[in-house]
Image (cartoon, rainbow, N blue to C red; front, side, top):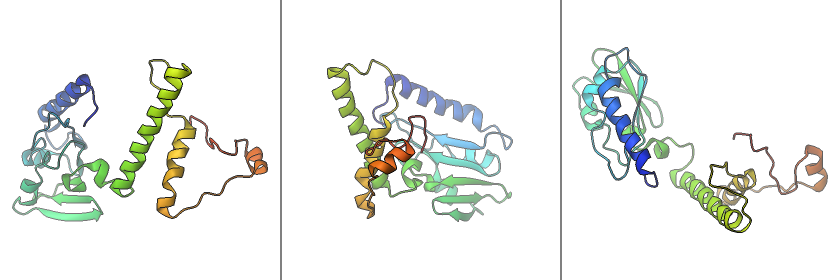
Length: 201
């Protein structure tokens, strides 16, 4: 996962080690198992077949790592007597001969892309546009206007809404602009932002 600090990478790798040591202690254990590896320090078979055999019934297994080999999917798919139940697109339940199963998201591939509600390239476009507008806002308001200090800030809603507006044409959608009267009626500006900073989409 590019762009993370060395501290974050260290924490992530320690989390994976912790997962391997403690999360797979039996079928009364955890219900969610996530493989998280950095792009630089990625490995394979982080979650093994043996781990999945020991997981609690209907434990959810997914990968938020760098590649699609961090979960031992080939071993799982070829396990004698394994049955696969498709729950919905990108969600499959693998049932072992003893009757317990694990739910695997996105066939063990990157869950943020495989299970996103939109097309992956569209999701990434929204994310990257968000980042670019944030960087431009920092450049404008940090170096010139001294609006920001060295701190963590939420992306201003106006920019969040701009990201959405920029992507509407690719969906074949047209945004109707509020009249001054309509904007006044609901207490917002004609050009937004249309939601308060505390609002979560």
